[in-house]
Length: 262
Image (cartoon, rainbow, N blue to C red; front, side, top):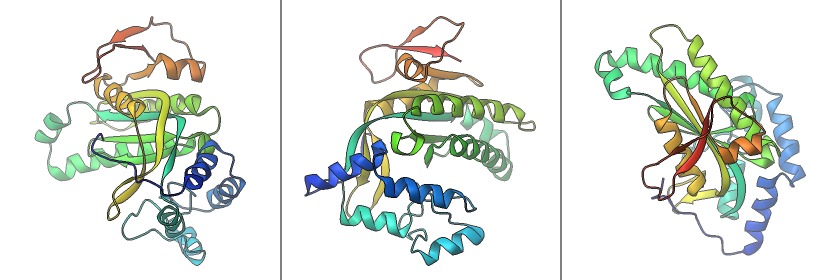
């Protein structure tokens, strides 16, 4: 993730406009998302929620919201907006990472098809948990997922929604038939750059910054069935735990991080 770079804007007004979108001040985007979320089916555009599959996908294509060939996670309309007005904004968000524990050993003891099916069941559980709490499933990472909870989409209580999604995901994985994958989840909240990253030829909508890297580290060290939440995210989500907070040394980070286990 550190190798990605924001795509700069030549117009400061672009960054201000995207700030209004990501902070939830843009009524046009909110109205569009409410409209499209009434129409099936998944997957959807990360930004405007236009459906890409089924009958809903056919309707979205009429309004020029088909997935782009270059980036199937954005529709043509949203991708066009980013191309015309590149950039993004620094906003406070919550980030969730879910990671399969010991995936190398698990793959070694299963056929490729068997391992793929187990991953697909995990991906489906993650998609439902994140989408139901108004998060954006930003990336499938081979044996994990990254999700963003942005105020303009998840609302002011984005941290609470991220924690709720994490709990839903852990519970959903526990309900999967055996042999299910051991999954740990990490959540952190803070200021991140949200917008277009990459280069002129290969760009994507994502988030960058320490908050993303910390959430990834928490997801990688959480035990199977464990939800690790930084105290920053826990305070923002107004959640408590009977387990005392602990200080974690995270790889690549100079200062230890206080977290709670849910």
